[in-house]
Image (cartoon, rainbow, N blue to C red; front, top):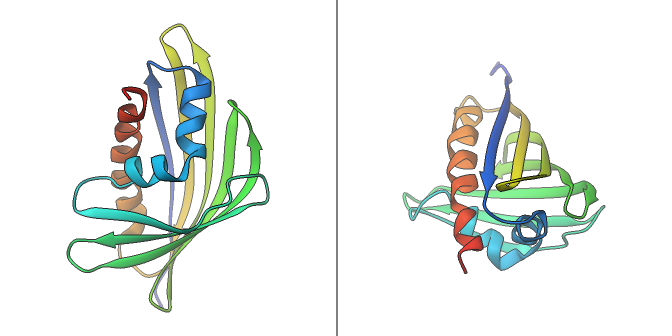
Length: 150
């Protein structure tokens, strides 16, 4: 039996952008395809995008080494310029890899916007997805700053 690995990740970033601009980077599918890929070896492609409360996204994460994952996101709570809460189920082929609850909070601060992302993840297959999640999300949250420079 493969034990379920659990992790809770909390990541905070402050961006020199208004909550309106930070929220827009989450709302726009093309923007998410750009910034959510942690690095140049990974490509994110949305097959379905319905960013709204009770909406659903389906995206493929394609790694340079041939790894392919399918992420299905269900939006549970969205408050414009304040928060985004969603569940994410990840599969690879027919195998369920992980499930997570992701909470994004946007708070205006004098420097712009403080974004707090809390992820509660359960990894099912022993692949270390809970550790990869921290690395991937950390890089993606750093990448989002490029959206504000345009």
